[in-house]
Image 1: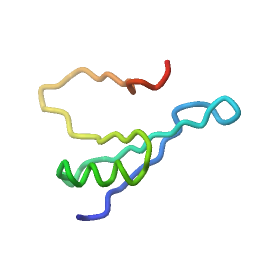
Image 2: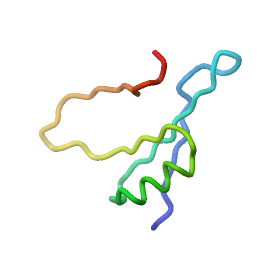
Image 3: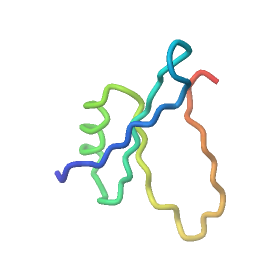
Image 4: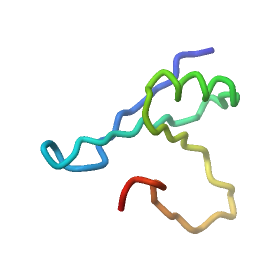
Length: 69
């Protein structure tokens, strides 16, 4: 498996109010489910994988479930 490019993104304010982060992986290499699970488990936090949208897709919705909002 080629090493995944992982971005750590802060999704809440700096301490003392928060410091929640998520791992984001641009999946431009076509990782398998097993490879994605290895990456996700190694970071021990919420991990998202970005996939290309279908050609006819024209709606973007950005929300991270269960993030306490």
